[in-house]
Every structure is written in C-alpha cells, then in structure tokens.
Image (tube, rainbow, N blue to C red; front, side, top):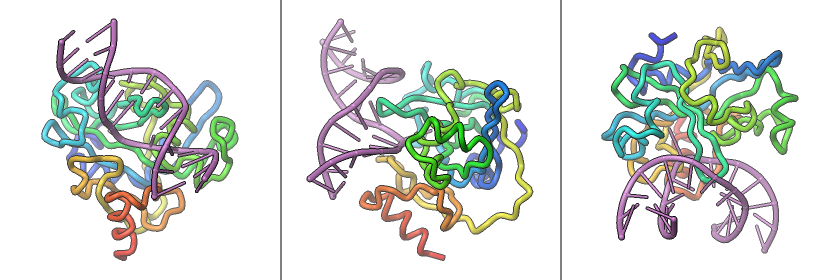
Length: 204
DNA sequence: GATTGGATCTACT
DNA sequence: GTAGATCCAATCG
C-alpha cells in the first residue's frame, strides 16, 4: 500500500477514485467508496499548505507516503488527506466525497441527514460522518484504524476540474471525480471553481 | 499576546 | 445568494 502512494500525486488522486476507505472504531466498521479527490503538490503549489514551509501543522505531509494528514479549518471542519510521494516531498490528496457503504446508521447519528448521497458529500461532511478528527492525524493507512482498499467494481467515467475553495492555483485541473455521481459535491456553482466544475461535468 | 483568515456547511432570505 | 458559526495556526508586535 505504501507503494501505491509513493507515486506522482495526480496519478494517486485519480486512482483513488473507486477505492474503499475503511475506518474501524472498536467493533464497528465504517466504509465507503471514494468518488471525489483533489491533489495538493509541493511547496510551489500556492494552494498547498506546504507553501509556508515545514511547520508543526503540515509536518505529516513531508513524511513518508501512505499516512493520513488531518487538519482543522473554518472553525468547524476536519479535512482528510492521504500523504503521497517520497519522504521529504510535501504532497497529499484531499478526499472530498465518498459513497457510504458500511455503517450508514452510525453516520446518520453524527449528521443531520440519513440521505446516503448527502452523508459524505463534501470534505467536512465525510470526516464528520466517519468520526475522523485531529487524533487521526499522522496515522498510517495500515488497516488498524484507517485503511484503503482496491475495489473490484468497474470504473465509471472520470472528470476533472479546478480545485474548490482555493484562491491561488484554482486554475489547475487537480480535482478528480466520477461524472454524474450523486455523492459528488457540486455546491457553490456561483464561484469560479464551481462554474468550471459545471462546465467540466457537461463536457462529456 | 493579539489579530486575521481559512482546502466549509447549513440555514435562511 | 449570502451570512454566520466557530477555532486553530500563522504572522506580527
């Protein structure tokens, strides 16, 4: 599994679509298929946390691939990322949306909806549903608490677009998602990134 | 020590 | 379509 993440981040971001995230909490298992990702690559990417250099907050991104980078933002939201590329090179893939598979009931308890297409749609929502917090920052994806597994299912068409919620660097098409998947986040159509997303969705 | 702004979501107009 | 919630990390003094 570290091999999978020790590759160019854009490839990893694309290949993560369709893979299954598994989170274990005691006897319970929560899981779902990844349907939307974004790549953040290196100190030269203005949208990547690593632009400011190595800090306590982004330390995990500089470490070995195949680990979780979890951080808090906007006062109420955790974001889940997977560290990619070789140790010493800061890069990660943000998980933006998931189609829930196991643990729907547990997720519904934590959210204000039980609609499977809304439960894990959006990066802040999926961490809330899976119960992922700052405690998970730096954990390896070894299947003990967090795991990522190949999915046998055939892959639907993949689209790409500018990254959402990003100012500098939003022109890079580093967001990947399954076209027309109901659990893909599509809000904020009024923003530049949002309009690009709609355009990308229409384009085949 | 204080300030500022952010890889967001929801509710409400 | 837009405001408010809400708190941490980075920056500045």
